[in-house]
Image (cartoon, rainbow, N blue to C red; front, side):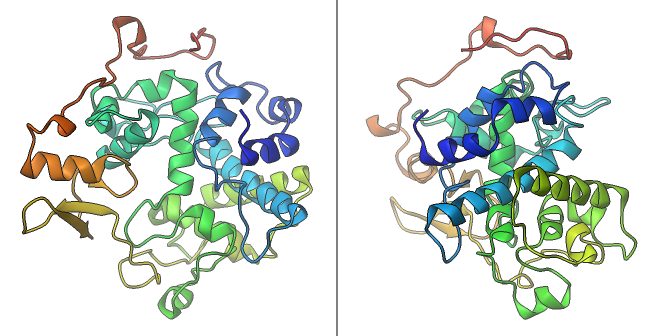
Length: 318
């Protein structure tokens, strides 16, 4: 991998440090799989607000790694968990390093992971357990949640921790802040961890690991109050209150052969490279040769996921 952001990250988070952080990780959670997933998102460890020199980019990368790994540490129990416990199935079962769930998220992840075919967004809807058995997909799901908005009124965790996000006055009045780790928790699981004026166990756990990783990487992480770190008392990230009004969906337009951006959920996302074409083709001209699948990905029997992977199982790598 020759991606600049991956080279920068791997100089900070070496394989030996990875093994120090995650000594009991499941076999699919390898260092190489983490780096391969990162390569899909060049802005991760690839930019910083108001600075372009390498020293600043190095520090921004350390902050990003501390943020993402703190959430991974909590959600996956130090990479010893790859799917939700209990009785769950399909896309409503959380899988991967941040326990991704929901049809919209699986569609987006599928389009990111499988490039080229017209209906590549459907692969993980049909085979969601690939996210729990393919290590690259397990980490790619975490980068997708970190780098892309989880809702049309929410900033990204990436933009928040690096200070690109500028909260509205309403957001500031609801204690939502930028360059605050707690706001990234709010984005990820705010309804369960941030609404109370009492610090939640989960919020404190995430904040603890963030501070630990900042120290481990030698990062100059943003100065934050305890409240800003653990997100207690932060309001919801709702439409019109955050300063973010993002149109992340595409829908057929009233006129022939066009689609447009909308705020309501549809099956077409602006993050998926083929979805504008899918929208136009599905609505206006499905039989057009440019709309037909040629090399649609379809897993073979050998590729189908183990329904219940075990920590000591050996996974084949491509």
